[in-house]
Structures are given as C-alpha cells and as structure tokens.
Image 1 (cartoon, rainbow, N blue to C red):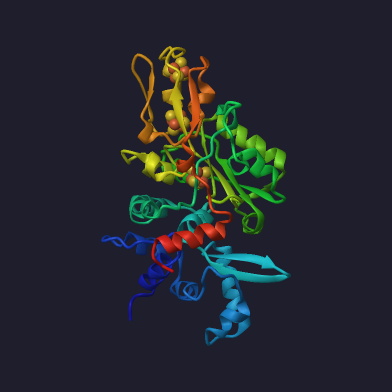
Image 2 (image 1 turned 30 degrees about the vertical axis):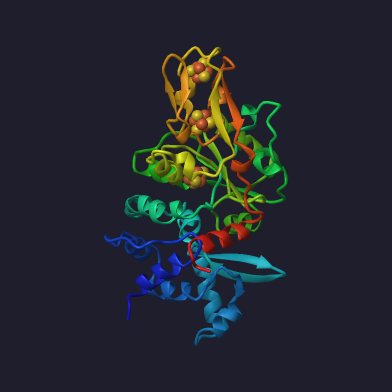
Length: 352
Ligand code: SF4
Ligand code: SF4
Ligand code: SF4
C-alpha cells in the first residue's frame, strides 16, 4: 500500500489550491513534520464540505466520541478546519496554503521553515500560477486614487473592514518565518486580518486576537505607511486581508522572480508617470515591492511588473505618479464568495 503521507499529499493536491509532488519529496517531509500517521489517515476522510463528527464516524469503523476527540485535537493543531454552525461543531479539510501552513504561525521551527522555503517556489509554479483564479488579489491603497477613478466597493480595503462584525488579527507567518532565520525585514508583524468564521477559528486556536473595526483600520494604515501591499482574499466578500511585503510574502516574493508578474496577479490598476512633474528622485522606485519602476531622466514603469498597488503614488511628493484603471474588458471582477473562488479554481485545475 502506498505510504500514508503520499496518499495524504495526493488528497491535498485534489483540493482547489493543490499540493503538487516534487522529485525531492520535500512535500512529504513537511507532512511528516506536521501529521502523525494516524492524523494523516484521518485527514483523508475530510473534504471541503463541513461535516459533523457523527458523519465522519459513519465513514469509519470508529465511535463518534473517538472520532470527535481526534478531529478536535487535529483542528487545534491546525491540520484541519473547525467551525460552529447551528450549535454544532463541523470539521472540514484545510488546504495546505492558504490553510495548514498559516495555522502553524505559532509553532514554527527552523526545519519546517527550511522545508517550506524549498517547497514554496514549486507550489507557486505548479499550482498557484496554473490557475487563472488566485486565492489573493491586489487592491489599491485609497490615497493613490484620484477622484476620476471609479472604485468598486470590493476594491476598498476600509469598506471591506467596515462590513465585518468579527475581526481577528494574527501575526504574519511570512515575516515571522523570515525573521526566525535571520532574514526579517522589520516591517509590521501583526497584520493578517481574518473575518467571520475564520476569525472565530483563529481566536479559539490562540492564533490571533479579536479587534475592533477601528483597530483593524489602524493596522491597515500602519501597513500602508510601512509600504505593504493590500491583498484581500479573492472574493467580493473576502474572508481575510493580508498586508504583504515583496521580500517575505511567499506569493509576492515568488511572483517577483517572474518577468511579468502583472500577468499573474488579479488587479484592475497600473501606475503611470506624469513626466513633466517627475524630478527622478527615486523615492517611488524604493517603495515599489515588485521592482516595477526604473529611474532614467524620469521614473518609468515596467508595466509587465506593475501590480497596481498604488504604494508609489502615495510616496510621490511631486504629483508625478498616478494610478490608472485598466480598460473595461481587462478590469478584474472577483468571484462573489470564497466558495465560488474555490469552485472556479477546482474547475480550472480539472478537478470537477
Ligand atoms: S500573505 Fe502577506 S500578510 Fe499573509 S502571511 Fe504572507 S506576507 Fe504576511
Ligand atoms: S517619487 Fe515622484 S518625482 Fe520622484 S521619481 Fe517617483 S514619480 Fe518621479
Ligand atoms: S509601480 Fe510598483 S508600487 Fe507602483 S503601483 Fe505598480 S507595483 Fe505598485
């Protein structure tokens, strides 16, 4: 019989975000670090459809109590997802990224960090870049938009936050893992905003702390001031907002290695220079997380690298940088909900 970790890897690869195999087997080393063989066996009984322990027990030769105890412990370890609905506890599979990896923000060690960083480029290349629909999108910072630009409500980070009843902030696993191995960038650490059901899961598992809308907006502004890109989950009603740097964020960092990251990012905007006003000071180029600006006689935008985040606009004191909207046909409209996002990703990967 195939090794339990190989079967679990296959199971995770059949979820929308994927978990592609490598020649080196680093992905199996990661699973061995996280799951016991029994936990690996149990995880394969879960799908992305939330189910009570009683349903899962029926699929197995075990009592409901045995199954419930194990599922609860696994959800506390961040190996699967747990939620409450109608007074009942439900369990579902967690994808590897975003999911199992992020749930380990508080129990990282050097071995896991090393294996993850070996695996992340492969995960990006064989999975993230293969689907047109991504798990994140980029929205512009409000300060970068002129009055003529028509912004959709789902593109306004503050509005997204104001629509939330439950918000938890968690440490950024990307900056934490880089800092733990001496490669930290010093940018703000407590920046991952999680909403709704995910927020309860984060709070109950001790991965984050509940905050008000005001505090969340304060975190957003602090992140923007530090030069972080706003990346909400890819839905009109996102369940999270990430504030990311191009040096640690595994998405942006790997995207940056591409010739044209703009083609792999969901965004409706791009930067443009008013050359008459530009004094070629280079402040915008230092701020850009994607190396999309070169300074010649004036600043020039490499459009293939620009992800429309607006950070460069906010730091230009000479009114020389602006954000423009893409043509209507090229504007990005996210799926309505995160469930739609995952269904679309699964279709694009030929899983359904
Ligand atoms: S995706 Fe962005 S905010 Fe989220 S953990 Fe990574 S760098 Fe931090
Ligand atoms: S910050 Fe403004 S003035 Fe300076 S190089 Fe960039 S666009 Fe030009
Ligand atoms: S040039 Fe850089 S900082 Fe400016 S919008 Fe594009 S990616 Fe963002």
